[in-house]
Image (cartoon, rainbow, N blue to C red; front, side, top):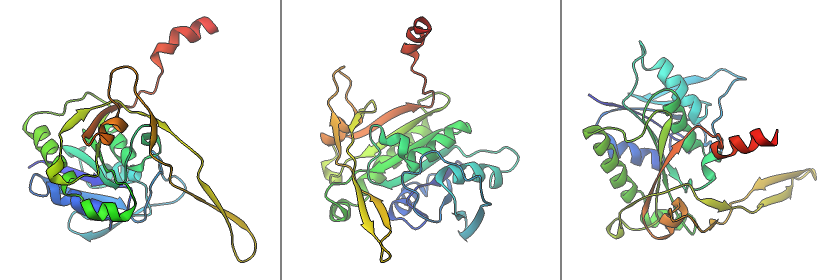
Length: 260
């Protein structure tokens, strides 16, 4: 029987995680290891300054107290898959919110999938885009995301994972009803336009502290003929972006050699 290892960055009790498990529960044996607390925007971070503990909540369902998505995959492969056994697939999500463009570098959801492919396991990061706050997410829920995940996992299990080593699929689902599903677009990572949304407050002692806000989902249009993930989502399509972990700017190597 196939085995799927699942994590997320919204915490072990998130609705998106439950939706992801439900989407693939009859396709494979599912093992869940998720952070105890929300770890949004933690990036590809490992916990090196304190020990971590698996807390078994039910059969094959663990929270890692208090780990990151990367910790969850790294330690699960060490502790729950003996004798160098590996799962057939790593799924990270379903994230509450988008992971588009350069958000991928911040994303704990993407990081869970990154760790999977580093460890030699085909991996998908899945995110549900929503607009207008919680009311929009509640209106659309995860029905379309579950349909998409199930279709893609079935396709992988019936055929093969379409990418090579150290490459993952970053999947974003638009905020639309299931019956309005337009289809898939293979995309590049877009060019996000960021602001600086930091809010300063003072506690009762007069000490300043800051909350990070949410950036408006804005971007630069693609000019090379390749649709970006941001554009695909804006048009109502599911975006599938192949991501590789080699961050070298290969086109600039010769330029730098001349520069030196």
